[in-house]
Image 1 (cartoon, helix red, strand yellow):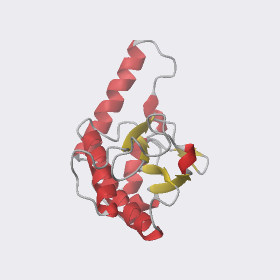
Image 2 (cartoon, rainbow, N blue to C red):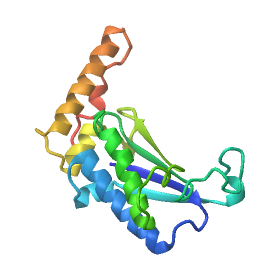
Image 3 (cartoon, rainbow, N blue to C red):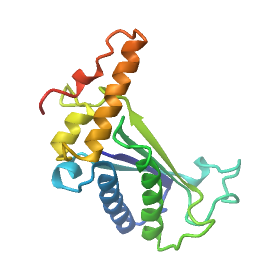
Length: 186
């Protein structure tokens, strides 16, 4: 369930380019995170744009674009549930985001293009997602989304959360049973 915030200079993308970038990001992020692009996944995949005036965003202490790489200034903040991305999938998210931007802008990748477009991945701790007054753990989100219960993603998720729970319990951390937040049916 990727939630994406795109910060960019005001007017950096046309409405058509925003539409294209949004659809492309939604598809690739759903496929990388959950392995499926379906209606349930799209219903929880959000993209928000924040436009900044050029005088409010400096690179290298300059507002005039001196240090801006071809392709423009973009900051993609991609928020996902903890354990939803294995270490192998994090670089895929970054590469796919950059590719989607360059495709949208009609630019070919090279050593400079897109170097001012940064991607930050934020993982929200298990039990810290909620909607409708209810906590949604990542396993519960995956079930609602239709992610394969016996697939690699769910195996990684369950292994990760079990290891985290053991680590917290071994350290004597009170209330360390994090699995309770993700076990209730949707």
